[in-house]
Figure 1: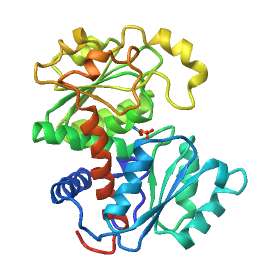
Figure 2 (figure 1 turned 120 degrees about the horizontal axis):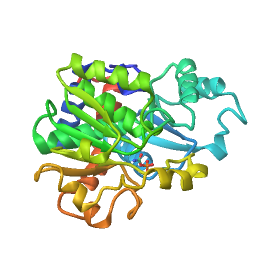
Figure 3 (figure 1 turned 30 degrees about the vertical axis):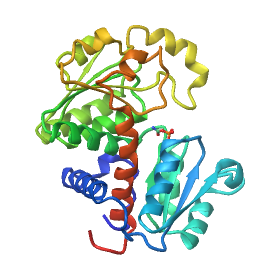
Figure 4 (figure 1 turned 90 degrees about the horizontal axis):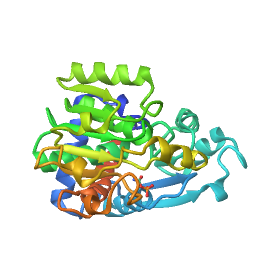
Length: 308
Ligand code: CP
């Protein structure tokens, strides 16, 4: 994977997903002390706010012997003060890898096209592959396997859901998604995910009601109803998503051993009730921690000069 971009999880093969997860687990078990990215620099180019992604990438670089520079939109003016292509070519002369959070996936593609260093998607309007890899790592740690594990995603068919569904399909999981009418993933994307899941020994099913997805699930996952950039449609979304909140009653439909996941930040009392996210089945902070370990693996595999 050395020198490669990571823009979408669907660019990976099942073996590459497995390699990233194995590397992440190994780096997590070993603790610090690695110098895999000694003297390497990561540019964190962010058009949107972040807590987890920004801090976990920064700490990942430090713990692997390198360092990170945070660049926000008010400083860089990506596509405004300067064309995306020029930013990509300038950064390629200074740093070794870019992690970019953009409103538009097209901006990310433009950046990757013109950079001659790896570009990692730190969230776009289509995908959040680093989140999905950390999520798969979290599920794998809990169940010792991904194959056949039933993951129910209840909520919006946006970036987090898309990467999670693609990752689950590559890992041979049983993915079940429930969204209100008009808020599922696009039909073509659903078809590709179902085909990928079947190729890899799993399945993907899409439902209109949360109970159908959650019944007998091993993992119940939800996300905010209005993501960054969708604030204008908040009231309309709140109405559409009524009945899609993860309550204790909803969790009771899943297996007794089921875990609850959320990529955070969460809106308690909307997509998830407080007693669920704070309850014993919740693994949301393990998930947040695993952003660090998954991203260490991604950085080491794409930007290190050392064989792993
Ligand atoms: N889950 C996630 O990407 O969090 P941040 O927006 O805080 O980075």
